[in-house]
Length: 96
Image (tube, rainbow, N blue to C red; front, side, top):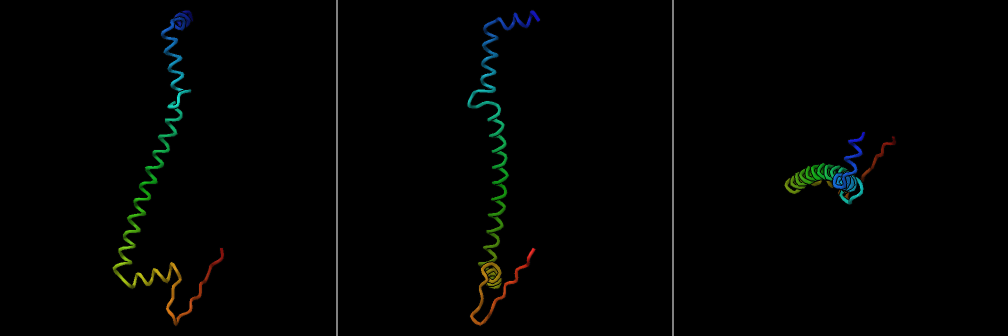
C-alpha cells in the first residue's frame, strides 16, 4: 500500500496517469469514438460490397435487355404493365 502511495506521489507518474486517462476517455479521439468509427467503417465496407454486386446485376440485366428484344418486351410488360394497342391487361393482386 505504501508503494502505491509513493508511486502516486511522483509527479511524473501522476502526470502520465492523468494524461492517459484524458486520452482514453475525454479527448476527441477517445477509445469509444474509435470503436464507433471502426464499426461504421465495417458497415460501410459491407454496404459497398452489396452495391457493387447490385450494380453488376443491373449491368447484366441491362445488357440482356439491350441485346434481346424479347427480353425487353417481357421486362416492359412485367415491370411497367405496358401493352399492345389491341390488348387488355388484368392485374391480379393477392391479398395476404
